[in-house]
Image 1 (cartoon, one colour):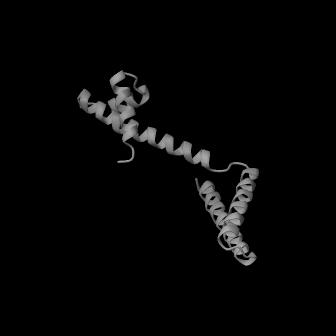
Image 2: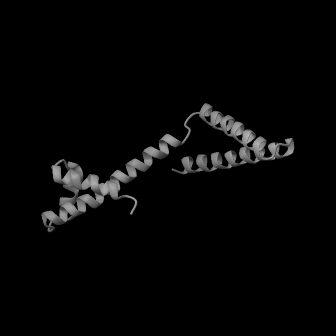
Image 3: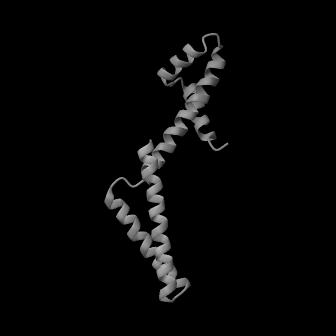
Amino acid sequence: MADKHFYQMAAEEVQAGQLDQALWIKIGADFPNESDVGKQAQYIRLRAAELSNTHKAGIARRLKPQKWWQWLLYVVISYIVAAVVAAIVGGDEVTTLIVVWLTLIALLVVATIMLRSKSSA
């Protein structure tokens, strides 16, 4: 289970009595006949999922270029890295050109996928 850390954080919130009040009220409304232990278990499960989703969204936001110049920077850096790797591996101009163009095509494919997923969200 990759989200153990988030379950631990949620359990610590319960132990410290520092609950997300809106979530606790929702659990009380959704599970009115549940014991306190059962409500705490539900809280931990839902809060861990919430923390995990927030964390994943933050990572995606930090990794995704937001401005046109960030895309340009990624392309330039990728081009330079590809050219250096091709020069080290192949040494001839044709190999270098092939590796560089394949890198640029891969970046365009990734950019297209990211833009489509952003427009559908």
